[in-house]
Image 1: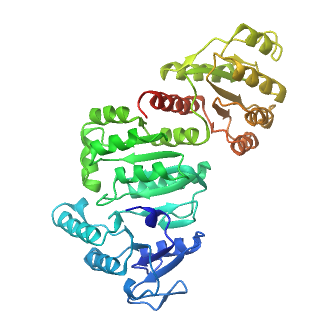
Image 2 (image 1 turned 180 degrees about the horizontal axis):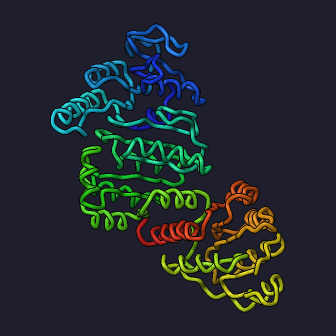
Length: 455
């Protein structure tokens, strides 16, 4: 059964909706009503007549029209009964916020089995339980406790940790990163990673899949599903140590498994494994807006020698090659930089960061057949204008160039105008060279997977 009823519903019932601002049922209902969602929203609670100026129903069965999705935020003792009512009503999808199931073990695990039996009996699908909700930024659906809707973009984020996922969603908003779906999977009792990969593979608004994973239950199916997907898949897998694995089990009841096995499986499936949260979203940003390069030969341009050295070291550490430019390319670049500056890759403009300098050098390097991708660095000084080199690069991007460009505008305060130009021009920007190169390495890795692993 399609998961469209959950991620693109036309109508939603919030079961356990509350007039108390400190209740999750209140927060989720308020978010749905204020986020721009165009479908119908129905509060359900037998104790209230109205909530947030909406007519409140005492049961989902009494809502007079069809309901696609029910978000359930009731105490566990009511969860099975209201799920049964959803089945009788013909609801297609459930987001179960309620906790207290398999993550507790023992009795909780048995109750979760009963929950799944109800879901399967009525041919419904379930996200959760123990989830903090689902967000669709393109449709304005905020069926979660995220405080605000992310900017719409091409990254879909699957997280097994609800609170971490929500914190990260907030963080991406600060970064100006565009998201599509944010899915807090919870206990994955019915819908798991395999189901989500298969759905997102067909989803036209998803360009990149980013995952926070604690454990995977259907390992072989997961590998096969990932291998069939040509879209980039990034995974941050936790529980790498004994302490972490123990924490994973107590968090969601998942078995972390051998870290070496996960690394091998991800490589076999063409999944880019990252080590931390920063790498996850740095790489996701680059993969969502830039094409994959045809190889690992990198060109670097900077107005500061130190920054280009840092980038060069990072390239070598990550298996990227700083290739030599053709003599003809070097001759053209020499005309754009001071006589004492170097026209060898990496290019150091010896402080020059004018429009003509960056525009010309970047254009010549992109045309050089020895270069597959560029890292363009600007180091801000009090005399510099970060907008000029930014506009120079963006203007080139408007041509027919298919080689990826990763930007690094260093200096923080004072670079804002340049960073804004880069963002509006579709160029991923990072505050330090290491992060820019890490993101570029993910592009190269994805290209390698497409050639060797993916169909």
